[in-house]
Amino acid sequence: MHLNTIKAFRHDTYSSFGRAKDALFNIVDALLTEDRAKSFPELSLSPHFERQWPSLYEALEDGMIDQHYLQEVFARYLPYPSPEETLWVGIDASGIARPQAVTSADRSAQHVHNLPNCDKPVTYGWQFSTVVALPETPSSWTYILDQQRVSTDTTPAQVAFAQVQGVMAWLPENTIRVLDRGYDSLWFWCRCSTLPGKGTLIRLKGNRCFYRGAPARTGKRGAPRKDGDKLQPNDETTHGNPDGHWEGKDAKERSVAISWWQSIHVKAARWLEMTVIRVVRPHATNKERDPRVSWFVWLGDQQADIAHIGLGYVRRFSQEHGYRFDKQCLLWAKPRLRTPEQFERWSLLVAIAHNLLVLARHCVAAELRPWENKQRQATPQHVRRGMSKLLPQLGTPARPPRPRGKSPGRAKGAKMSKAKRFAVVKKQPKLPKLVPK
Image 1: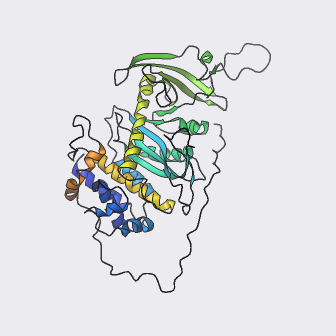
Image 2: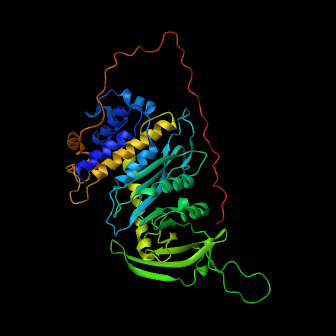
Image 3: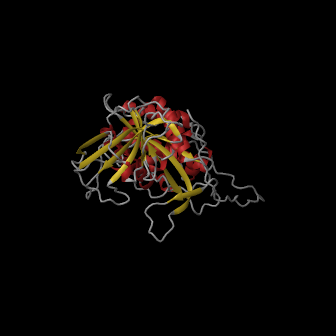
């Protein structure tokens, strides 16, 4: 990526800021350079943050960001693969735990992974839906296209569809969208069938029930059958003979077998034709996180290379690596901000810093610790350690701070009221009713 392109990206993101734009951009530069910060206030120690530490919180409280324009900027600078290659886009949601933040509004119950069996895997906080461009090999080098908070009056599926619908206006036609089992929803499937692009690949739950096409009329009295034989992933007696089968090796030279059934539908939306895919990996441990048999539904071109699509789902795990990098290194979940609007602005700043590292990947020499493996691919954190050498070459569109003098402080006799408390929203919203074609 050329330096002029990175400069243009920085200026365009700066243009998306409204109030407190200079302080907001200083936070982005601090995120890029202060790689040893373990808390949000420590970002003010960066030499590229020219203000005092309270300005971190004031910028997120007073600032404004045009999210629609920022989404366009992200898509405009997306590092596209070659024209003959497919662009893989992942959609997923991640939670920000705030169990003790009783003064924060719009918190809901969030599922927590990796807890002991004796603990209840539930916490309370906010949830964010993210759309990313996935790299060819699983890694943290994802490129964020959009990031929005899932409010308590909507669902992750509704937010994900709105995000993809907006992003696809700037993406090429050979785009495949990849989602996990959390989006096993007929409403979402029907909506995705209207989107441009090559198609959508979604992982299935084992109890999902499908039907083959209706058989020909028999000539007997009575209404003809509307559905053919059943196909249910967790019932082997319903599988029958697949319409296609492929056996080969994956990228790591491990055996994989892929079977698929075409022209499949569900009763509630018979007009929606889909392909059900089964991927068998004999080398898997057959645990919850490493199943030996996985099922998917393909919503798109029925004549596409199904084997290539089935093998491509492994790219989706890069999004998990990207989430880990944002939370562990870019301090995404660290700031204790009171309002969800403030945390939305912070999430967009983290996305800008993340994408800048991706764009500067080949312009910065990765800096490794003595104990880190030099034979492995450089990570975004390695590149982040060298960003302090690149930023002086790029310059900054942010204006230097202007001294305001000593603050007058709180007025004499002023009474500070107690902050408003908010209850956790426990009622889960439901998806709209399915509208037939």
